[in-house]
Image (cartoon, rainbow, N blue to C red):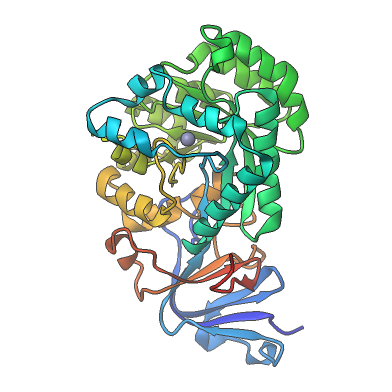
Length: 419
Ligand SMILES: [Zn+2]
């Protein structure tokens, strides 16, 4: 059977493959010059130098894209977003500029709680329309998989609705959506001062209804949210119900949440701006650790904080890192994962090759989808980008630009006018 799609004349094919087998990567993966990628249906079936292309597989049935010497790479994997919400927090931007901190705004009933009020009163139709618009924007940036957290309902009905909307949004357009339950985002007003009671309620009433809907359970472990001990008990209970674990930790203080979650086998620990290097080395375990550190460099930028996760030192200590926007209405209203990649180089010390791994194969590891997406290899899903640059070094360099020319999802070229 002939190829259904052929991308030929790739100036640099960033495979994100060929490094250490079955482990997240920093560098060591292969860049093929003057190469091709061939797909049959949704799958990559051949990759190699142009000189080795089997022309007999290229027929009138084959759609041919000529990359004309440009960079071709895997679709971006966005492994940490708060996709589904109503309203926005543009009004808090001014307060932030005047010097109010994130925790001050949260304590005064703003922040997450103001989005909760807007989200609880929004209809399912409105939430779905918002989510679809954001997914369209992500796709235009070349994002082909998006993790979507709930967490702006903080009651049973709304939280279940948010997970349902994320799943439905995944069905209505081509970008793959992976659902995470973040009911434990902050303590809702109804449980003020009783965080443990709220977590017990989630375990008893909500988690059992999410089996088969949400893949991951996440919690915000921070002062003003949930303590390490409450988080531990909650994550253990979620794990017993069959969920994979994630945690928001060490964003504003070093409380030990990352180490606690990693000890439970968490798939990822996210933020890590205040994670100390001893714990980072322990998590990395000489390159054999099971947990990925998901770094979110646009968050300190938007919150006007000076402290960024020391990604360079994490990698040097064997802790693999992924990069994400943390797209959300409060601490990062940006869907530009390319900008996050550049900021990871500028503020966290990653090399361009490490940062590219952070938004592809390592982000796939952070979603336990590393066997399906995140690299260009035979047998993987054909999620592929053709960029507008001839050299990967230009990717972090054109700061804030979108280098994407073509987006291919599951072997299908997305039309430019696709909503
Ligand atoms: Zn987040």
